[in-house]
Length: 270
Image 1 (cartoon, rainbow, N blue to C red):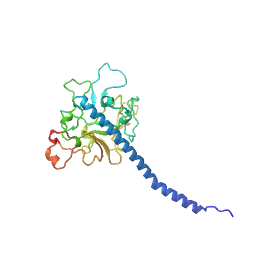
Image 2: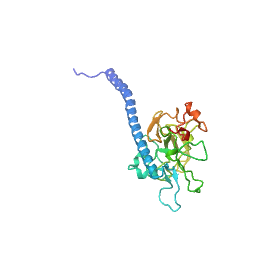
Image 3: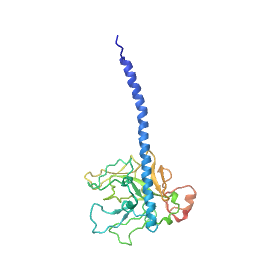
Image 4: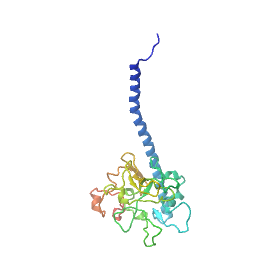
């Protein structure tokens, strides 16, 4: 007499396999995400090292988010961005991208180099809301209109001052419009800033798909990767201690534990 599994036995085995798969698949997914997070932290750390090496070669000034570009400049690069200033200190341009950044780039329907997943805080000497370190120079501005970056010596508390954050967007390449930045206060949440991934800000860009552009503060679960002025990198929950909507910043607020990790105030010198 031939022995075989009964239908009930087969169903029980299939059910057990399904249960085990349901248990294991999330574990595998979490392990994969953890590996990407580790790689993302590594990439951010290397970018910060490049920014640190830039400083002594440029009179202690932090690099700009965007610099001027000569009218006669040709090619795919529309402007000189932070990535161009840091390129001499970087051997592998793949570090510009966070491995978990999912957005397909669509920069006016043109392939402009490699994706960029990180941006730098914007300093404006005419607006106290915009805590940050890095200046911005539009090609149409005069020299007097240009906003320079701060110097390293002006940073009050380097170990508590964020100047790099994860900005995932469909329009951000190592060439083209890569210098794109957003107001630093919108990196926080109090003012209803840029959403945390997987939520996204939708906007219209010059691609063939109006309204299809996306922008998020990149995140792994509830944590995003931030780079500090002293060179260290930390994954943090942006909802907790990164930015408070209080202007101007005072020592009393600092002493009370109300944190603003974009500050650069001289009062906070170590």
